[in-house]
Amino acid sequence: MTETLHHWAGGAVLKSASDRFGDVTDPATGRVTRRVALASPDEVAAVVDAAVRAFPGWRDTSLTRRTQILFRFRELLNARADELAAIITAEHGKVLSDAAGEVARGQEVVEFACGMPHLLKGSATENASAGIDVHSVRQPLGVVGIISPFNFPAMVPMWFFPIAIAAGNTVVLKPSEKVPSAAQWMAELWREAGLPDGVFNVLHGDGVAVDGLLTHPDVESISFVGSTPIARHVYETGTAHGKRVQALGGAKNHAVVLPDADLDLAADQAVNAGFGSAGERCMAISAVVAVGSAGDPLVEKIRERAEGLRTGDGRRGADMGPLVTRAAQERVSGYIDAGEGAGATLVVDGRTVTPDADGEGFFVGPTLFDHVTPDMSIYTDEIFGPVLSVVRADTYDEAVALINANPYGNGTAIFTNDGGAARRFQNEVQVGMIGINVPVPVPMAYYSFGGWKNSLFGDTHAHGGEGVHFFTRGKVVTTRWVDPAHRGEAGELDLGFPRNG
Ligand code: NAD
Image (cartoon, rainbow, N blue to C red; front, side):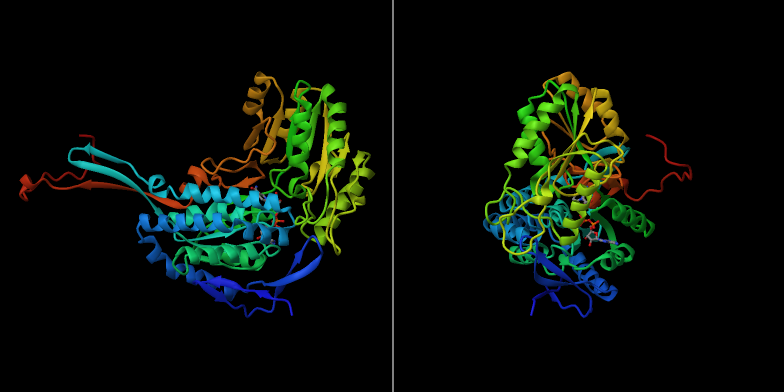
C-alpha cells in the first residue's frame, strides 16, 4: 500500500477526508512512490483556520524571539541540507548537486530574514509641527498564502516564507502536488526550530486548493509562482477578492551572443543554462540569439558540449536528470517533432538518449536546434525542457528587437567583451533580470526577484526589500503629548485644516 501524504495544520498532520489523491512519482524510474491528498474546500478552511488562530500570538511575539527561531531553522537546515536535496531529487528528478544548490539559494533568504529587526525599523520625525512628532511602523498582514510550482520544491517557497514568518505573519503553503514532500519536511524542521504551532501550515492540493485560498476571506495575500495562464488567473481572482497578490509566471529567456564575445564562455554558459535541471527552470536560457559571425562557431561549440553530457538518474552522478512527469516528457518530445517539421536544423536530438537509470524514467536528452525562426512553436512557446534553440540575427538591434517583442520578460543575458554594448543592452532591454556574461542572473536574496510583462502580475517582486514590503502594511502615527506646563488651559478652537506651524 502506497503511503499517503496529508496536510499539516496547527503543528500536526491533518488527515484528509477527501477522496481525491494525486500520484507522486520518482521521475528517474517512473515508479509511483506515494500519494498526496488533494484538498476539498472544507480542508482549505480547516488549514486556514489553524493559521488564523496562531496569528495573534505570533504577531505579538517579540522580534528577538522570532528571529531566534529563524536562526535555529537556519542551523538545522545547514546541518540537514542533504536530506532535503535527496527529497527534491527523488520527486523532481534534478541531479543531487543541483538540488543542493536549490537548498542553498533558499537558505540565503532565511539568512536575509534573520535581519528582520533591522529591516522592519520605521522612521521618526520630531517636531513635524509644533509639539507634534511622527513615526512610521510596518505591521504583518495576517494569514498569507504561498502557492509554488514543481520546479523548485524548496527554493521557491523559501523566497517567501522566511520573510513572511519573520515579519509576524502566519503561512499556508500550497506546494505543487507533483513534489509535495519537501514542504512536509520543512514543516517538521520549523517545529524542531521552535516555531509555534499554526505559524507554518501546509495545504496539499490542486486548483481546488488554490481557488479556495484565493477566495477565502481570512487570507490576506497570495504569493504565486507557476505558469503564465494560472498566474494571470491567480492575480485576477485574488485581487478581485481584495487580496495583495504577487503572481510570477512563465518565461522565454534569450541569451544574445555578439561576435566579439568569448565564445567558449558563451557556449559553456548556454549549455549550463539551457540543460541544467533539464531546462525546467524559469531562468533557463531557451533561445540563443547568435549575432553575425558568432553563429557557426558558437553552434559547433554548443554541440560538442551538449553531446558530452551524461543523462540519467540524478543520484548516480549524471549531469542531467529526467523531466518531472511522463506528460512533460511527451510534451517536450512533441515540441522536438514540431521543430523538425517546421524546418529548424536539429543538431542534437534528445529523443534518442540512452539514460543511465533503471525502470521507465521520463528522459529526454539535451536537444539543440539551429536556424530557428520566430514563427516556430519551439521559439514561441515555453517548452520547459532541455531544448535549446539558436536563432540567427544580423545585428545587435535585431537581437534586442526580438527580445522586446516577446510577451515574456523574466531573464536575459548578453555575452560580449564590449562594455558599451552591454551598457546599452541593460538600458534598452525590457526584461526584469539581466546577466552580462552571466547566463542565469538570479538576484541575491537581498535584491528582489521578478520579471516583467507576462512573467509577473502585480508590482512587487519576491524577497529583498520588496518582499519585506509585500508582507507588511505601513502605518504612520502622528503624536502630540501635552507639555506638563500646559495645566489643562482651554485652547483656541479652529475647525480649519491644520496649516504648517
Ligand atoms: P503550474 O502553473 O502548472 O502550477 C503552479 C501551481 O498552480 C501549483 O501549485 C499547481 O498546483 C497550481 N495549479 C495548477 N493548476 C491550477 C489551476 N487550474 N488553478 C489554480 N491553480 C492551479 O506550474 P508548474 O508546471 O508547476 O511550474 C512550471 C511553471 O512555473 C513554468 O511556467 C515556469 O516558468 C514557472 N515558474 C516561474 C518562476 C518565476 O519566478 N517567474 C519560477 C519557477 C517556475
